[in-house]
Image 1: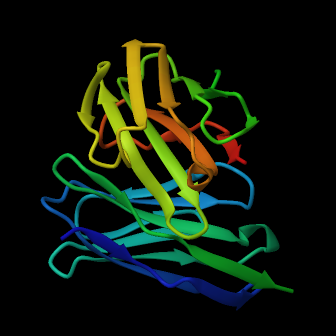
Image 2: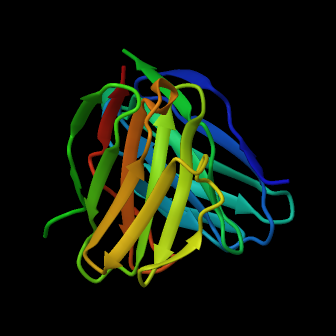
Length: 108
Length: 113
C-alpha cells in the first residue's frame, strides 16, 4: 500500500528546536517534499529530498533515509510565526501522496 | 510574477447543483494538480496533468467529479451533481517538473448546503 504517517500535533517553546517525523510507503520513490501551511492559507514549499542525508536551509533542515522510508523536518530557533501545519509528501512512480499534516504550536 | 490563480475563492450552493472550479497555472509549468482538503482527510490529490494530459486520476472520488485541461493555461474541476460531503477547500497547484516544488493557488472554499 501507499501511505504517510506523521504526528497530528506538537507543541514547542519559542527559541527551541523541534523535529517533525514522517514515515512513508510508496510504489517506487522519487522524492520527499515538506510544505508549510498556515491556517486558512495554501501550502508553501519548504524542502525536497531525493537522496539520503540532510538538506539545510537556514533555520529549517530536512533529512531523508530511503532504506528506512523515513524523513524528518528540523526547525531551529523557533519563532511564533512557525506555528502552522507541516505536510510531508512523497512522490512515487506516478503518484503523489500527502500526510495529514502535523500542527505545530509555538508557545511564548 | 503571477502565481497560480483560482476562481472563485468562495462558492456556496445547494446540493444537486453543478459546480465548476477554475485554475490558471503559472506560465511555463507543465504539471497541474487538483487537491481537496478537509479536516478529516487532510490534503488529497484528485488528479494531475502533464502537458494537458491526465496522468493519474485515481484520486477522483466518483463519476460526479470530472477535470479538464483544454490548454496549457486553463483547467476546470466540475462536480455534478454536488453533495454536502463535497464541501471542502479545493486547491490547484502547478510545477515545472516532478522534482520541482508545487506552487499552490489560494484555493476555493466550497460549501454545499
